[in-house]
Length: 359
Image (cartoon, rainbow, N blue to C red):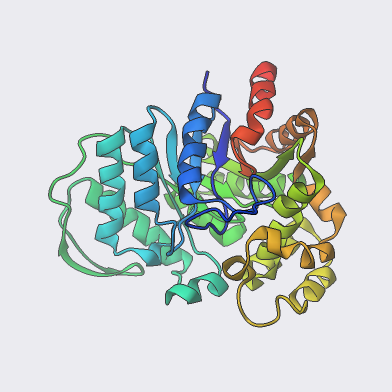
C-alpha cells in the first residue's frame, strides 16, 4: 500500500562520509549511504515519495536520486530543494529529462531561492521571483524540444537545446517557500506544487494555503491543481536527547539563518527576542552557519534557547499515536501531503501504519 498523502524527507541537514564509532543514536550523524537505505525503506513502508535537499559536498542531488531510482520501483523522487543558480539552465533540464527517462515519470524538481547565509558558501546568488518564473518556463520549452534563444530575467541564452528529449510527461516542478505573497504569486503562475518548510505551525500552514489558493484564483487557475506539501519534524517514540536534537537543535540551524529564521518567526507570529539571543550565543556568533559547522547533536547547548512552546506548536513529538494526531492537524490546515522530517522513515514505521489504518 502506498499512501497518497504521506512522504518523507531523507538525510535532512548535514551528513558525514562515514559513521564515527561513538554515535549516540540513529540520527545523531547520518551518511548518504544510510539515506539510500532510508529511501528504500520508505518505499517498503508505503511513503509516496522522498525529498532530498542538495548540498555541494556529500549531497549532490543527481547522484543520490539516481541511486534511489535504481533501487526502487515506484517511489517518487524529489529535490527539496535545489537552487536555480546551482545549474546552468541546460544542465537542469537535462537532469530532469534524464531522471524521467531512467526511472519513469516519478521525478519532482523542487526549486528554491534559499538563504544567502547558505548560498554564499557556494559563491551563488539567488534569482528573484521573476527570474525563477522565467527559468521554469524555459525548462518546459527545452523539455518540449525547442531550440531556445532568450534574453530575460533568467538569463541570456543563444540557440540552446536538449536535442534528445524524453517522450512523455515532463517532471513536475515545485517551489520551496513560505508562500508569502510574492512567492505565492510565482507558485500559482509557474509551479505544479509547493513544499512548505519545517517549523511552521498548523495555523501558519493554513495561512500559506490560503495565500496560494487566492493567488491561483486571481489568475483563473484551479487551486486544486497546485499541490501543497508541509514538512513536519517528527520524533515518534524517541528518547529525549534524540528528540531534542531532531527538533530543538534543528531549529537552531534554521533560526540562526537570517532570512529563513526571520521568515519563520513572522509566519508563526513568534516573539523575535529568543532568536536574537540564540544568534548571539557564543557557539554561533563566529559568522559560520551552524548547519555547515555542526551536526545537530553538537548544538544541544544553544538549543536550550529555543522555547519548548515553539517546538510543541510546530513539530510532531511524543508517541506514534500523538505524532499521527499532530500530522492530521496539518492535513486539516489544508496541506495536501505531509513529509516527515528529521527522523528516518524506519523510525516513522508505526506512524505510517497508523496513518494507513486511519485513511
